[in-house]
Length: 175
Image (tube, rainbow, N blue to C red):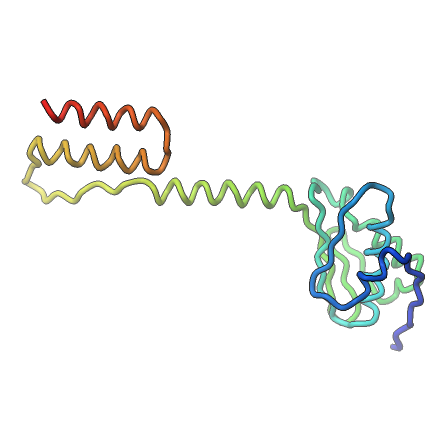
């Protein structure tokens, strides 16, 4: 199977993006041709460099219909290289075991933030002091443990209510 050489005209503004780089990205207004440039560049790259692995990311993408998948499929067709690509509902296989996948950045970022909050909350929970069966703590030991618990809670939350609770516990211990 011979590879075809694609000769795609490029707007002058996009020429710096033709230089080799691991990551490429642009931002700007609607209708400036960004998606069309990158769609053609991706198809050309997959055609020229067998085994290319790529991910197409949008800030907000709830469905593949909102992704750049349909645009890339149309570029594959318009450039006449469809025989080298296999189209699936959620991905595109490129020549030489290459693969193009599609992701939404907003949803993944939100999931990541929630996961980090849950991890921090789990790590902040103070562990109870180990007590041997048959022994009991003195009132002073219980109060010290309560103060440590309230202090740790305030440290992790920074909430004014936790600060007030710690203040009252310390104040009641001085009597």
